[in-house]
Length: 239
Image (cartoon, rainbow, N blue to C red; front, top):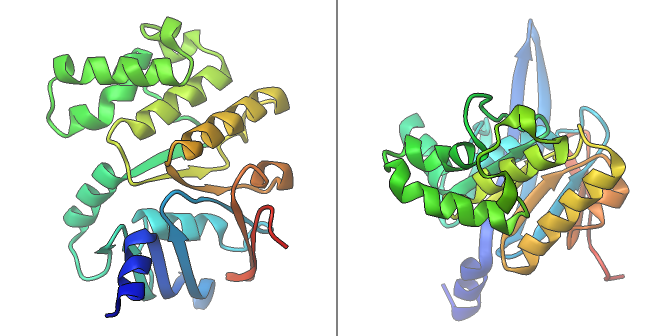
């Protein structure tokens, strides 16, 4: 490997090599993704677009280790996701990937602070060690006054901010967002996109699935899928 190859490898956060995903529907085989080769660099904000059924969420699930390719390879921050056990993938996902979903997935009986700290609590750390970091993240996403509030005391936008803080608690290599504003009004959704953009400006790698071109434009790059394969790959601000 020459120095240029080494430099490229150092700058690469995620790489898919001829990755594909097939599903069985009765007697029929369905290709959700086919021969996807993609490099996502550290510090990128990649928006994934495409019509319903184009493979957007499947691609996000492969990147984050929630699913495995039926062909090809996925490499996350230098760590191959093929050839390792399910337990190893689970540990890698918990410690290196942050997830933000459309439906927040907060536990109703926990406070905002407890919800944010949950991934580290599941890793065996005591709440006394997690609390300070969780509070700092809530302050970072603009919820310093909501630390002790439970989800039913928060607005939709506030709940999504809690979910983003939770996704960041383990200092993930990459933050994955699947339609993160699908349950929010347009004004609140814009606030969430601006928050994601500010996190990216500080160096956080983000991969976001969205159907909205305006939302996608907050990223630095847009990959559009069609029939399970990248049909377009453009950098924002470039011809």
